Length: 331
Image (cartoon, rainbow, N blue to C red; front, side):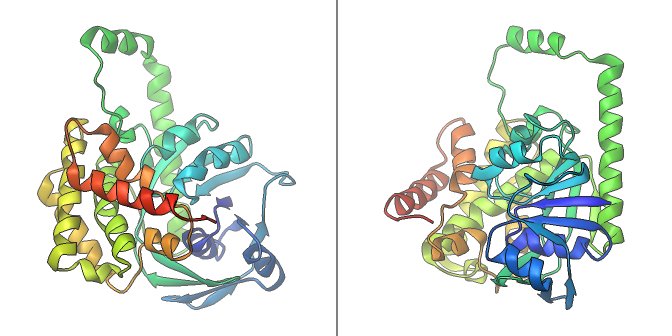
């Protein structure tokens, strides 16, 4: 399979490196990382030990092929640029990003969009070198398989408005055909991942999985970034309580939007990730240490914007991270 990985930072380089053992992979990232990969290959260390030599570029302007798959791993605020860059250049796109709303943005430019989650841990140690800090799993599935709530958009319109929309979106057999094609595309992607040695599952319940992942990120990312601590510091104490309350608030907002995510399930997922990634630094903490823009708007901001009523812990964490960003000269 011909695959473009758009956003070859830590996770993109790891997933791209694993895929390159079996497939024709092009990494799209930034210099000096791209230049080193082009010159010397990509070294994958940590839980794996191998070197691969994928194509590597800083943009797709000279990319003449139409790839079978685009894997998007850019920050949420760069999704629009990724959608434009990949438009007309990939048959199917899979988002493995943090936050919510990425699939809708990709769908403005691309016809077949799959939602995904990834629990592999990755750190870009230096240009040309990425370490896997923990083996995990990629789960992917049709973006629309679980209905409009996959996006996390709460429908607060009236019955007449919903009826009008339902009538205008009655695609009949064509809609069924598209859904079948999306499921087949997800199966092809799952098979491609597994053939490269990546643990992969194809699922129909991506709405639930995306909101569960959001609850985990809403609990871990801003708390670790603000406290400057690794994930394991959230096992107990005040930091643990903050993370748990943020996860519960996220679960509540999910339910308000029609996704059946119980508080207990969200908290169990949060605590499971804290335990299995105890030594890791969250992506938001890595951004803060590097004085980069964070994904707070696509994580805590997404939850707060869609809440019916107050989500005080989430709102406070969002506002504190935004305050930090405003006080920095971000890269």
